[in-house]
Length: 284
Ligand code: NAP
Image (cartoon, rainbow, N blue to C red; front, side, top):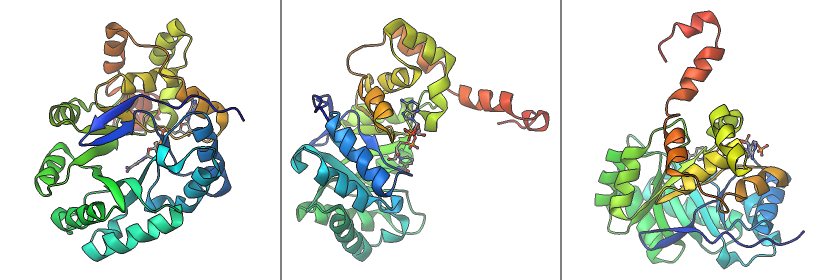
């Protein structure tokens, strides 16, 4: 396999330097996951996203170990599952994650979902201790609303370098993004291809045709072209991995960026159009 140039575009956020494009691994497990991670690193990816809940930390770690890339050149994220948010569980489950991943620290540890009953201060303080001990380089959150992210940032001294949230061309995140820009933090866009729905979008395909790019590449370009935004598309095979990686050799014009902005909300309209008549009466 030929080694490709590493992705050099990064977002600087609260002391972290996060590669703008990362590999998502949800629903990719076992050997398939190991092969995807190894292939992605070979293609120049330097950022891999996993979680305790994905049941693939061991496979992700095997992929990193198998790749011809130094561990310290890979930005590795994992996430604490909902059952592991009490202080003792933060410490024990992170050590178990490191063990499964086969590494002595992760670059980023996130709270996977806000919890209605575990105080966020308790979880974040334990995460900050792990940071002080060198087991995690940076800490952050996922699926927090703007308000929850603001409150969480006030609850701990260490910077919360990202809020990882659902963000793709059909989803408006202008408020959270403005907050991240103002605070010098990052917004990590998960499901950036709308879990595959953006791949067949006619507007994205039309824009892509002008650049010799696919609809998927336009969706990803639109994200990584925004300040402080990181995208983590999941792809399994080498073809998708290579296609998604090739989004740093073209730019969208302001008019094209605005056309993608205008797709907000249109996924629901399209799903509604495809639904049976009875469903079309439901106000999505
Ligand atoms: P996604 O990245 O939007 O879409 C993945 C789907 O798109 C897969 O079916 C994939 O197929 C397909 N695909 C990828 N590249 C393609 C291409 N170039 N052409 C055509 N199809 C393509 O969805 P996601 O997996 O939900 O989100 C990405 C990552 O975000 C996850 O894997 C996970 O790491 C993270 N995430 C985090 C949370 C959270 O709560 N924090 C929630 C959801 C996801 P193949 O696999 O066959 O390539």
